[in-house]
Image (cartoon, rainbow, N blue to C red; front, top):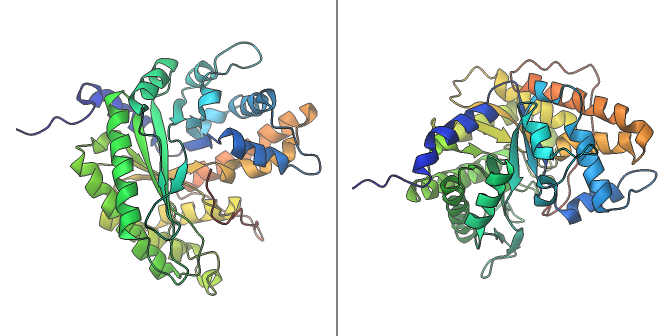
Length: 365
């Protein structure tokens, strides 16, 4: 007898939600930084750091969610648990505020990474205990999709992530995905391969193919309904310390990424929502645009799910000052518009446009 799979009764809703998020021309604003991570962001505001209080976190997220025209280029927003249950200054739940704009609400459900015993400082993601109960609570609050970030890394000499680490993280992602679907949430599967290392683009592509293929085998083993899922990978980019990384053009990165995806990701997955992963804001936009401009068949929507790639400049423009809210929202609008255009292959960078990378070694939260 063939198993019906997790979340069988939610299948129509799951598929509709996944399509609504991966609708083309729009992407995801990832505003799901944990309390500690958003504290680092606030502390990095220049010249005056912003204190990491619940009210400051709430106000900053309100600034994002109330930006005029947000729904023109944003189809979904990922929240941290604290934010999911907060309200705006008028007393409206953030979830209602976003849903009234036609934006789908998402929630980060993992509990962070921990060292994986028996490996050379590799990690696995925690949070399966009690996940079903949490998902049911989040669904009741208005969330309709979820995120779980698994982190893998290359070795110092270009070694691929270990088989142990890849299989452990793939299994965790598959169990998370099945549990989400049982409770009506579309799982975003996020097997991030960090940019740390000196490996070239060929090794980066080999790692991506190994990791993504292993993840989809695990998802299949757990009978996950792929039409009700989304993938959130890193782009195939040379390691941060690669001597030749600047020789790779956006077209090189696009070709390597799309090739790896075509070899490993089933066409039944509605959308691939890339993370920015330490790229600069402009770099992430340009590379996304190059992928969508490639004259190669792509059965999925290719779009964005950016955190730092949409917020780094916004935080600096805001600076924690009420009088800067409008300017910060205009900056967010500008970044969302660029990436919305890039998700259609229609972004045209300005002459001389460049930007610094947002790379942080061993990035985890």
